[in-house]
Each structure stands twice: as structure tokens, then as C-alpha cells.
Length: 336
Length: 263
Image: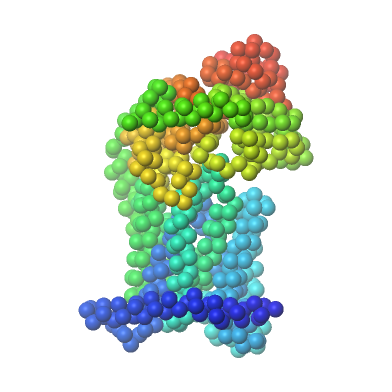
């Protein structure tokens, strides 16, 4: 039954959707190749197309993860990314299992998208029914996902356990053209949705009751939010791996919150910090021959520590200047 | 140019008061979070242009009643309507301004006073962007509550009173027909409280309906035209002068309450 569902998914529709993305990918190869001739950086040598793809995927992650993460962190939902990443792992296992048993040849990232979105909706429905997001339900979903993943993989004739590391820890060299194209589609969906609903998501995040009074369907925006989170998590998993993917949702955002005054500023700063972590991390891991996901997270945490220090200094400087509080002007509102 | 907003608002208010549509109407409403009702047998109607205060002791169901009126909760029995529509389906947020008891906002979130006040314009623009006109209205609202100098400050770094002013400015910026305030002056310094009630009065004079949930009885008796005294059910509903003379307060609060003590 699932097979019947997945076959059309991998054929026609998907190819049409991905076709323009391959065009973008070709352009990206060309761009980085030009950059290579200019700079001579070995990292982006045209011999290593996989590095070109990895950098593109990394740059996309650096934009979409903190964008979503900003809304999650300020609702105390930092852990939801972790929970969804572990269910996405179950999705990967489902994909590998189907490929192993039925030889479907579907990308495990696609099954991961499906499973993670379903899990996201489940978490949201549980929280609607119980009126609160709680760590207990989050912990249950997290461990269920991971347990399901490990069981499916061990069932899988023992043959596929080899390929699992790339999903757990991420890998720069296994980002295929197809996976990069899938990520570009996810990127477009996520950035497009946030651009459209930025005001609404901000209102719901900042003040849920007032947002509800002002006519926004808080329930629907929450559902949109968790589904986007699921997409980000799966997209970022290729490089970051299941275990570390949530860090990109949280760490740059936490750093940006230390140094920003306004919300717009914090969105921008979190993206800049994330990109910095991604590019430095990919560079360091390439030359140091270490796992990219881990290096990126360590760099991000380093940047976070620096932001905390800068934030403290800023607070000192700003404390000196307290503006004058004006009076409430009843006349102005009434007779004007 | 700056005179436009308020006079527009005033004429809208007057147009609304000419029609017969009630702003809020509850009939035989009962609601409980568990089996035992928090409010029961509530029937009341608020007409355009009224200044109504809901008073009652702690735990008397004041906030629950407000949530029922606004459609944040659905009554177990009876009906609640807002501008003639069932409250829970009403979604023209541009007609309601809301100031909560405590800022429910995240403690850590980086956001400026201006960004908070801009939220008042969100219901007017939908998925679009705020226009220069919207920003002018935001500036006026900031000016009215005396927070212009704080416009680019982080909300989380303000005192309780300053923060509350920002939320009042947000409600002003929404240019609503109905202003709902749930104990809005908690944490606000005494001088500003007086100025704040003067502001409410002048807004009411310009045609805006005001619904005030209040614990501070002296404030209510000085400013509101009509008092609803609540303790699970309605003990009194009528003009403020009659409320002061009636024994409703003693019955609803027990014996200790006076009009002078604040609560």
C-alpha cells in the first residue's frame, strides 16, 4: 500500500518539481568554478563537485534553520527540533527498509520528510489536546522515533546498517545532486512561507492571546510552524546529521538574542551567525578532515560564547542612557 | 494631518452607535474548566459607546467572562456574540484592541517597543506590509502614551509600568471599536494610572466602547459608567452610582471590601 503511494511520488511529479533545481545547481557549479579560478582555493576545486553541493546546502541551512529557530526558541520550543530530527531518522529507516525489501529506489530523505511532517502534526495535536507543549510528550516522540528507526534498520536483513552513519552524523561527500535539488525545493517552501506569514508568526510567538483576539488562528499558525520545522530538520540532516541538526535551530538564535535589540535585527543576525558557522565549519572540517556537522556546531557554540560577551558589554554601555518617560496624553487621543 | 485619526475613529464610533447591533451579547452563558461552573447564568449586553467595568473578587470568573466574550473560550451552555456574530467564529481582529493583565510575552525575546506597537496594525494589513500611514498611526500611539523616547528600546528591558504603556499603545494603534482591558494598570505607578484612566475616558468620549476588567474598585467607581459585579454569577449590573449605594459589593466580596481600600 505504501509502495503504491511512493511510486508516483518518485516518478513524474517529483522530476518536474526538481528539474529547475538542477538548472540552479549547474549555475552554482559554474559560479564556484569561477570563484576557484579567482582564488585558487582547493576547497572549491571543480574536481570536487560534491563540495560545491555541500557548500550550497550549507548556505541554505544557514538561512532557513535560524529563521525557523527564531520563532521556536522564543516560544520555549527549542527541543522540538531534536524530537523531529529523531523521527526523521525513523523516516530514513523506513526509506531504506522499503528500498531493501521492495527495491523502490526512493530517496530516504523523501520518506524522512513524510514521516517527520506526520510526527510534527502529531506533536501539535497532542499539545492542542493537552493544552500545553510538554517535555514528556516531546521526549516520548523523540525516543519512539529513534527506537523505530533502529528496529527497522536491524530488521533490514543486516545489510544496510553500513549506510546509517551518514544520516546519524551527516556527511559532506554524500550530498547527491538529487538531494541538493530536494533541499532547494524545501528551501523555497520554507523561506516563501516565512516571508508571507512573518507578521502573523511574530504575533503568535510574542503574545498568543492577543494574536487570537486579533483574529489569527493560533492553532493553524502553530501547525504551519511545526511542519516547517520538520522540513528544515530533514533538509539540514544531510550535513548536520540527526543528532546535531537541532543545534542549528537553536545556537545561532540564542547568540543573536544576546546582541540584538529588535526582532528584525535578531533574524538578520542569527542568519549571519549561522552562515559564519557553516562556512567556517565546512572549511575547517575539510582541511582538518573531521566530521562537518560536529565542527559546524562547535564553531556555532564558539560564536555564541562571543555573542554573550558582546551582549554584556553592550548592556553596560546602554545602561548609562535612560530616556525621559513622557506623560500619558489623554487630550491628544480624545479631542484631536 | 495628525487630527485625522482620532476624528475618523470618532465618526466610526458614532456610526456604530447608531445601529442597533450590540458589541457584546451573552445570554444564559455557563462555563467551567471542570465539572463545576466558573461562571453561570450570565446574560448581559454591551452597546456601542458604553464604558463598562467588570469587578469581582479574585477567582470570581472575571477573566473567564472576558475570554467568553472575546471568543477565546466557548460557553458550555448559552450563546456569546461579538458584533452580532458568534464570538468563537468572529475574526475581524481590527475591531478589537486588547490589553492583558501581564505581558504574556517571552522574557528573552529581542523586540522593540515600536515593533510591539506595530502589531496593532497587523489585523489591518493581513499578509501585506505596513504602509507609511500605518507607521504614522504607530508614532501617534507611542506619543499618546508618552513612550516615544523608548520606541527603540527592548521591551524586556523596561519596567512593568513602561511595558504596560507599550501594550496600551498597541491597543490604541489598532484603532478598534472595542477596547478590552484586563487589569491594565497592574504594576503602573500611581500618577500614570490617573493619566491612563483619563485617556480611557477621552477614548470613550470619541465613541470607542470600553470594557474594563478591574480589581481596583476606586478606579472603577470614579471612571466607569456602568458596573457589572461578578462572583460566579452577576450580583449587580447597572449604573455606577447605583452600584455604590447597593449592597452588591458586600454580597459578592464578603464583608471586608470598601471602595477606598483598592481591593
